[in-house]
Length: 428
Image (cartoon, rainbow, N blue to C red; front, side, top):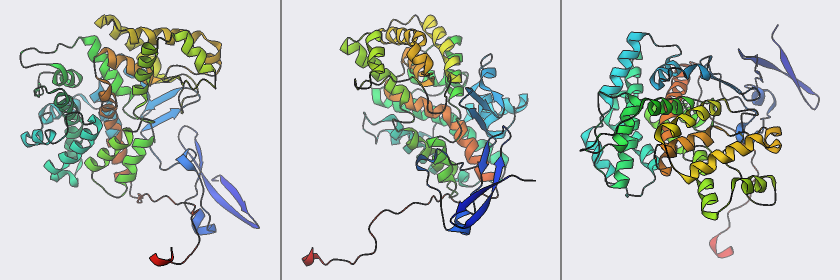
């Protein structure tokens, strides 16, 4: 017998079905609530609202669990391969050897941009925000690939996914080169995904940028750990736009715009800005931790704690180890990174933070890694977008394949004036 929940409204009792997920998550199905009662639910921020059923990502914030298609993220550490994880997320299973080779070959083939697209970069101011360029150029990309406005079969979808995942790093690298007045570097077909991106970012026509294996692995893991995170703001935006049957490119461009917000994709930027403020102001980590405990100080410790994870962020555990490897490999001497490591050390020993489970999160460590790689601050959120793209594509596909999909149309509680008459200009 299916469980039901009972809702009492005055003298009326309504039975509502209960849905149980594969990990035991429970939800009350209110699909027909308005039709039966005239009532809607009120949930600002949708923190208690399930907008969809999804088989892609599972999170248990209390236990610090994150799994992609059932696979714990910790199992991707030994042999980090962002492209393999992208395939897993999008198609729901691990690729066979020939499938991964074919997909990788498509990424290599599709990495260059149409030569005409290069001229579009010239239309942006040199100091234009890279996220604005990224969103605009993903939309522009759809103009050069009109055949992907609709998909006739799985092969066409695979090609579209490969084009987006491949070209997004080229667009990102070109936007950086444009901002520095540097010549564009064509993708190198002999390099793998992450190495190729760093090549397009930092190589010069007379000097190739060499990427140590430790750095390539670390960047693979940074992207893997950002690849999907359930129904966050940008992913929900992709689904919202996609629910109208907007094409994949338009939906992902909208996701970029949502990710641009400082409360979402800008969190690792805030970590570095905090460290810069500490350094310029001469504040010690000890002083900052003391200020963070004082509610009246106005100081906020960035990169600690997480809205979803009430325990240690599982992504942070992985990136902490990678952070140590990156700094050791590069031998970086940076006062901001020294402050960050001391801040981390003190916070993990401080009962105030430990008891409240305010541990360093993924943004804390990803910000440190990207600064060590000399990726500029305004490119941090772009890196987040590159990593999150497979998740957006997977979510768009899952929704697109669902025959019960309906256009998203939230309701509201109107609080404006009641009916009133138009007032002519001479009587106002």
